Length: 346
Ligand SMILES: Nc1ncnc2c1ncn2[C@@H]1O[C@H](COP(=O)(O)OP(=O)(O)OP(=O)(O)O)[C@@H](O)[C@H]1O
Ligand SMILES: [Mg+2]
Image (cartoon, rainbow, N blue to C red):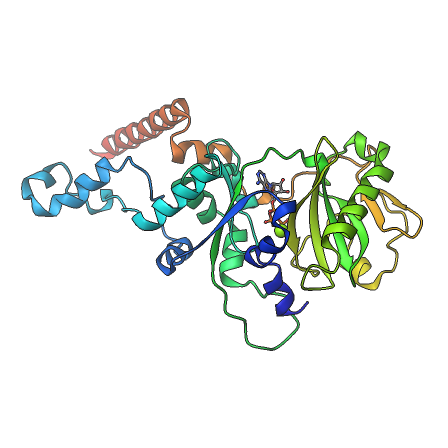
């Protein structure tokens, strides 16, 4: 994989070429101070929230000595989240234009590994602070910011990247209707069910029609129009049978090969050999793989990025009862400790 292939898969490179066939989106350049904030892995304090009263009080306390009476403990000072008023206005305007709910991405990646941290466990965002919460919790976003050219084989210096916030109109996509197509020398060589962790009955039944809609869409709208001849294309087939473009990804290891392996895809060998998953080759067509009922349902590949639910509930205060139980437990422990200490005294 060459650096140029990665450059060409940036959202702002392909979106103007394929606007008609994809979900409506807006692209905003990200100021350097916002990038610095995203990369700063100190305490997670999300800016953009209106609820800053207590923080303001603490920060103002320097000017009025009397105010500090209630806290003389340095450690209780809250960390104030930075604010980006101009950027915030631009983001909010863009969100409004897109109908109030967006799916956020950077140049290449969405924070798919961080949806668990959001209150609604989804990447649906309505404000800059929603976006910061999922971006700051995502290793995929950090990857875009720090090592976008990982696995590239050329030694040339890294091309300069202008970081961009991509806001896509929120759309309820049905996971069983998403497919990933591997394109080599401008031919679709393989198609995989995108969400391979689940078995979707309709895919087996409609294999031929799914495959032909994908190939027709590719031939009419994508082939020879993308700046590379090798790439990975994500598509969606809606309930009326219309095909949509979701994303372009580099043809190489940085992209998840789903039900194929990169060795199969690059060598072209075994592509048509049957594996555990259903694998059929339509005459002269691409290999098509999907998860069948015989395969045990697999865990979501992003599960390993999560932290225990209890920890999350406690830190966000989402479950007040859990927090009360936790505080009672702590109090109980402290009382026990102090009575032990008392007991030690002669
Ligand atoms: N506009 C949208 N509204 C709601 N959900 C979306 C939207 N766009 C994408 N999704 C969902 O999020 C998933 C990931 O989106 P996308 O492919 O853009 O992210 P990505 O970071 O490029 O993923 P990958 O690393 O696999 O290439 C999609 O499979 C789809 O289910
Ligand atoms: Mg992608």
